[in-house]
Image 1 (cartoon, helix red, strand yellow):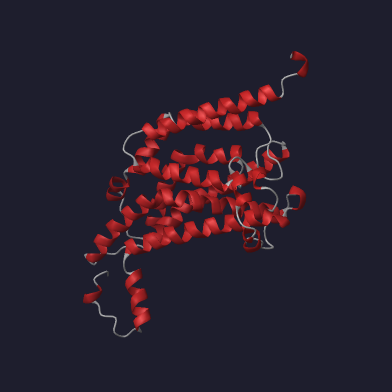
Image 2 (cartoon, rainbow, N blue to C red):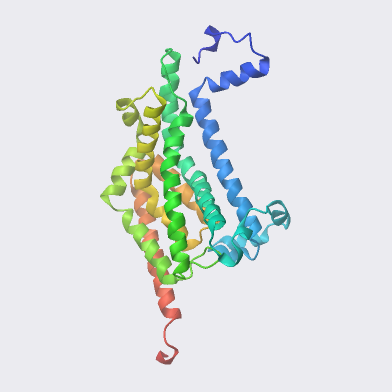
Length: 303
């Protein structure tokens, strides 16, 4: 299948033959899949943020940096499908759809890069099988199964965002309106970094080869299920860090990028030093959020 020299494509045009050569290589497909879907996720998020307008600082810590960008940002990122569908923060069918798409874009932007080693491992095994003329399934099917888990998380997060907004814990800019709430989220995320469940899922994410070797499938349904299982391992590893977005601002691309990098690097390391360091930082940050909130609301008469 991948040995194109054994299967001449003279009957195709040169352009079609080159395209066929690309799609005959699972490893190339895996890279294209990750890059394209991650790029689409970040592009959609950029368009949404551009259309929101207003000071970037209102979107969460670190987002004030956007105010330093040229005004062309707002010109290029001003589609009509964005936050204008939720006037004054009102939720409706279009609002739920918008927020749901936003969360799905976030999962593509943040989680697919961290899944790259897993997808590429599958592609390498599939590439070897294809060279032996064995039946293989495209890594796109594996990625679809993986993404389905995180799309499910995105749907759940959409409902959670609605509830938190109604409870006045999130403001119309999708940023936290409560230091106590932000602190609690950070502490939960930090404590989870030291849990046995986190460690068990992280081990699976770091070493996907044994999983694929013992559970290899040659049908689209079987490979999709492999993607689902790997997505569940990834969810068990990263769900708490994803919840941090509720604390720092859901549209905070600075924290999106930071958390995405941390989750990717975490899966590429061989020890838990980074995992535990993230946990310590999150707990300290959570305590700081809570302490700051308590001091800010301390009765004036106590001075």
